[in-house]
Length: 385
Image 1 (cartoon, rainbow, N blue to C red):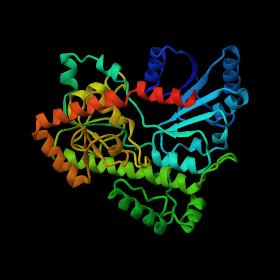
Image 2 (cartoon, rainbow, N blue to C red):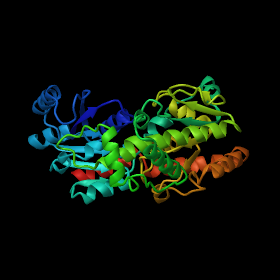
Image 3 (cartoon, helix red, strand yellow):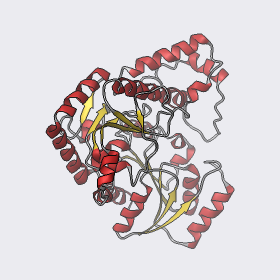
Image 4 (cartoon, rainbow, N blue to C red):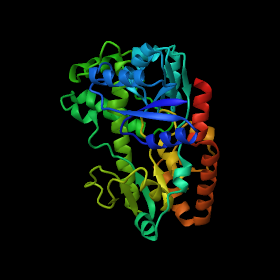
C-alpha cells in the first residue's frame, strides 16, 4: 500500500515511517507548519496537489488535524490519525464526523468522550515503541559514564507554557478557589476532578478575564479548556517541581530538560537530549527512571513509560488507570501512590539492584511482545482495510 504521512515536530514519526517501510508499504511525506488548523490556502494547495499527483491508500498523521480531514473527505481518501495528546482540542471540531476518518486515541477517557459524541470510526489504541531501533542503539563506555544516574527524569517543567500564570487580574477570591482545587488535585492520582469543580459561576468570571478564541467549528466546552490548558498544566508543573525538590534533598537526581531550574539548587540539570540518539541511553543506564504524567492525561499510559521500558529501563511511575490493563505492578514496573510512597520505593529499589534489574527485564520483554509499532500497525491496518 501507499501512504502519505503528514510530518510535524513530534516524537516517533521516524519510527512510524521505518515500520511502514519494513512492512512493505510505500510512503511519501508532506511537512508543513499550519497557520490555521481549519483553513490554510497554502497547505490546501500543497496537500491537494500531492493527492492528485499520486494515488494513496490513506493519509496518516500523529494527532488529528481538521484541515487534513476535510480535504481527505472531499477527495475520498482515508485519513488515519493516531492521537497521543490528551486532550487534543482539534478533536472537538465538526471535522471529526467526516466519513474518511479513522481516529485512534491512546487515552481511554478521551476515547470515551469522543465516542459518546456520536463519532463512528474512533478506536482506543495505546502508544508504542520501536524496540528494534532501541536494540540496535549501542552505547560506548563514554556514553555509559555520561548517562549513568541513580535517579533521572526526562521532561519539561512547563515554565513557559502555563496559561494560568497569565491570569494576573483574576479577583483574589476566585484565584484562591482555583489554587485550592489544584492543591487538592495534587493529592489525588487516578481521578481528575478539576473540570467537575468549575461551576457556571466560576466559568462566568473566567470568561471576563480570559479571552478564548473559539471558532464556529469548535464543538467542545470552555470548561474543558480551562481545566486542562490552564489548570491541568499548572498542576503538572507544581507536582514535578515539588517531587524533584523533595527527592533532590535526599538523593542524586539528574533532570533532562530545557526548563529553568534555578529554584531547584540540588538538581543536576543536564539540559535537552535528543529523543532518538540520547534519551534511550539515559533510560538504559539510570537505576531509576521517573515518570510523572501530565495531569491532562486522564487514564492513558504516556509515551514516556513505553520509551523507558522499551529501552530496558526501570520505571517508577504515578498511578494511571490503564497501566494495570497491560502491566503488573511489582513485576513489569513500579507504581507509587504518593510522595511518601515514592521516597520509600526509591530507597528500596536503589538498595535492591538485582530485583530492580529483574523488573526492568520483565517490562522490556512485555513491551517487545505486545507494545511495538508492528503490533499497533497490524491493528490499524486490520481496522482500516
